[in-house]
Length: 534
Image (cartoon, rainbow, N blue to C red; front, side):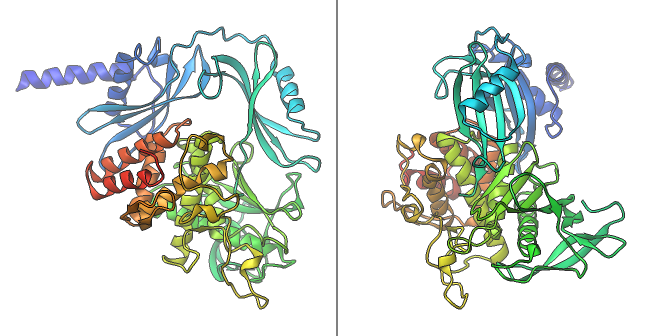
């Protein structure tokens, strides 16, 4: 017995020595991290790597309810980040290892650029047709690996260019410029849309007379002079600011001297009404993530987030921007088509993009972009249900119904008629998206490309008959379905995950949480089969 213990100790010491060569993750147990690292070292050649300890760097980790560790790695080649190059090591309590493999292997490139960063940025802005001011808040050398994004491994300048001015449409371009000849190789709009108080401030409560949710209690700050500000001291200082109907990035705090924000009206000159709705939705989203998943905010580490309301004039959309301001931005809509985009589901949708950024970070184009949007629709609905209960009314599983002007009669009564998207019946939505996955899904606009997955989630949670192929799925309830989807995103997916990868991730999450062959696991199988993903 003592000899066996000595051997185990020696093995553990050896594994810990391996771990010391890697970047450490704050949440992984040292043993699990060592086991995962050793597995990658042992399989480096099969993965197409030369030195796994140098080429794979720990980004973060988590431990699920069963005690299994999930360790996420980013890939580098000669010190240069490989776009979408990732891996997730999954280590059971018994030390068994499996791998979600997004590694781009066998790269052979000179990583010295011939084109300067500034020149490449100028090319990107010119080729994208940017006329006004812009903010390039990210610009670095990367490897664009061969595959669906490129025909060959390419050394590129990867820029993220945020355009917010009075000359161009608001956008956030991810642009990839050949670092050899300066040509723009690939680009996409990664703007994830919806289609501080002073030092003497103290925690306080105020009343939000919201346009969508009635009178609600808001956690705010109150200065020694009696001024209330929409900044939440109970939730790490999250705040709501106003853009004053500009798009120039100038913001101001929303304040009240009475402790009341808003006037209940959807068409109003009171800027605090949309602020109250946004603040309440932010509270609801933060609390849902904590109560459902034990998560501390969007990044899991409690990073404060900002919401910006009154964006532009007649702007009927919302978007997430995770780089320059770590914020979500919401327009006022217009009285003809849409009311302000600050319904709790809207807030949950945009903040879910922030969560996605910290986890799988699904690339915002093609199937991965569709899954990214689907994730926001799913979590947005879960936030909505957490506020209003479930079922709500005939708008269950409708995405963004409340801000549609046509859903109100002449007396202002809510009479549901149309929404932007429908998890229960996707073809009813804008653009008449299919409920079925097909090989064409990868070429669709991301909001449309995500609808088959959203329908699969609806069937998984609610149950029913697929409008794709007529298959019947027995639902497992919102709680279990959301837990499976959340674990799939946080523990099993990588940036390039497609529909079949999402199915695998969800099955792995279900097996880890409920067991392979459980009712939940079988329901995941059935739900994806019901959208033709097998």
